[in-house]
Length: 370
Image (cartoon, rainbow, N blue to C red):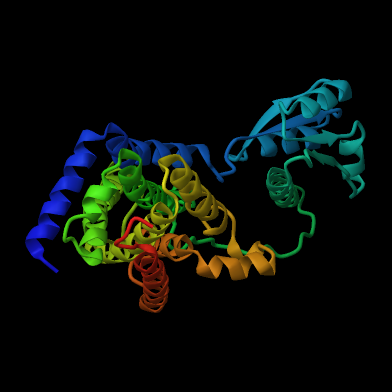
């Protein structure tokens, strides 16, 4: 391997990157845009859920129950005047659930009984479960308060003190943004590198390149190194935006983030170059990179959907997906810091998968026109 030839080839590739606005757009503008879109638009928090309240009883017990529901921070209670209004708003999605207090509730409560109706929108099961949990929590708080005021014998209260490890504020962006960075790095690495060899074939410069004394190793390294530097720069940009703009805490060392990002980029760049050597048009290579890289990373990396809740076959398929290990690494470094056992396993998995993709790229790269 000749270092001067390698440096000259890297310089040529760098010039092409600088002169190609789409490369800069994909490497720096697209990651920031995706970080904001996926970090904020995909929100799993359950705050201010719209809940309708149809209070058909004017008694004191019913009024106190309504006040307890309105005092629940996660609920935005909307008063309803009739059953028809309840059904109309629930069917149009203006409310996600409704509590119906019957007209004899206060009278029944004085006899030691009391029934209320809770309706939820089953079209969104997760939200329906949240509505039911918050409404039942408000009901239990109201029961406790009523027991204290009326001196009725109540079951002994259990003092539950909740604490969230790794994400004390329990805000979904703290979990989603690190996973989003893994998706972004998949796009930057696989998409950009999938175009480099195909672009040479389309422009007719590959024939001239193959006529030179450049070795296969020099050719591949000259395609990988500039885009590796571009990928690391995109990672650092995402880190700065996540920490200083979006307020996501980062608890791990930066050098470890760089090391794991390098291992992941070996996978993304290797897969992109492999597709670029197999397909000789940029359009086909880009489509293959998005299909083989972006979509599996988005759906199967554990970024949004828990891997343990997937069918067993898909769980096995995620084992060969580099984004799974990188997303897990990022979420660990951002939320927990250094967890040696988990990080060592992820590093070993990324190393093996990266060796596979780079090996396939070397095998498919020929020094002839055929």
